[in-house]
Length: 280
Ligand SMILES: Nc1nc2c(ncn2[C@@H]2O[C@H](COP(=O)(O)OP(=O)(O)OP(=O)(O)O)[C@@H](O)[C@H]2O)c(=O)[nH]1
Ligand SMILES: [Mg+2]
Image (cartoon, rainbow, N blue to C red; front, side, top):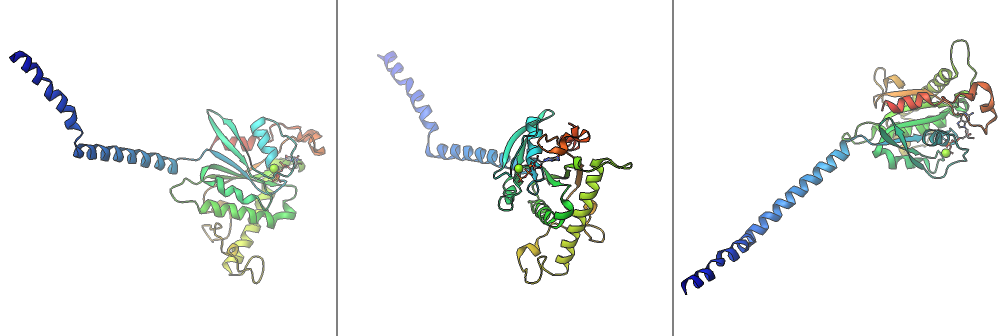
């Protein structure tokens, strides 16, 4: 009868109603909305990534400078005996509430360029120098440092500039004087030698003469990164790429005979570097 018919008709709109949601227009509109939301999320995440500070501390510098000794002191709290590294060491170092990824890049000329791979993540860069041999190797060490300065100034503007510290390491091999501690003497020596050598490089570039002599028409002679304010002469204080700090350090490497004498028994030889890291 009628009631049965009524009941039969009543569900009709219920069946039709959800189906009307899936019209082709509605489907197109809703997939467009989903795509827009997804794109916005991707754009937001990648923007954050490219403008956020990196989380890595890079240890770079010439072979035998003591990078691996510093790396193991920071990460394992003891300098492990090491040989010339042939691949980067990467580990995590707790710094206050945060943690920092420490990357020890070997100084071997054929491997040292690998630091470029970590530049995008670098929050800080420590250029480690053996203070006891810098007088002999000044020009070579300055060339290496120039590459690091160039890499810093070549980063895209969207990235915050990583902080740079020049570590005058193996300060324990210097003798304290009445006026200065070994760490201060180490900084003074490394700073003045590298400043002089980098100024030589800048002056020869400005004069249009290849650094390696006549015929050195290579990209190296065009490499930027030494721009300074004021007279233009290279000075660490006036470097346009950012602020450059210095730290005089040593670690107690029991395998070296010098580390056994009283003065170098100082376990806090890395304190200036640790302090710089904490301020990053
Ligand atoms: N006297 C003294 N010797 C050190 C100090 N730090 C490291 N050394 C010694 O210096 C040598 C080289 O140290 P490494 O840490 O292996 O040098 P590196 O910079 O990692 O060298 P590559 O891996 O070749 O790039 C080792 O014999 C260390 O024991 C220090 O503070 N004082
Ligand atoms: Mg090493």
